[in-house]
Image 1 (cartoon, rainbow, N blue to C red):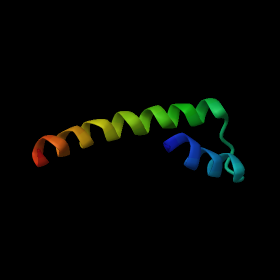
Image 2: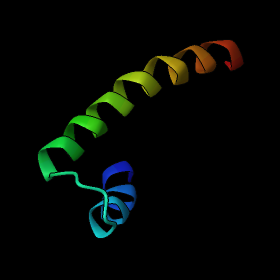
Image 3: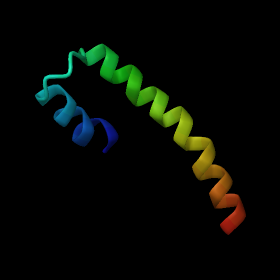
Amino acid sequence: VYLSEVGAVILGSRIPVSLGELFIIFIERTLITLPIVAIAAHIIF
């Protein structure tokens, strides 16, 4: 979901980003979001 929606928009824009850089952005977003979601899940449940 991250890569398909946002990636298509970024690649379609005039922002100079390659597919490899887009993959690195995807990994960074996943690594940042995963601990936040895990902590929130432990607090809620």
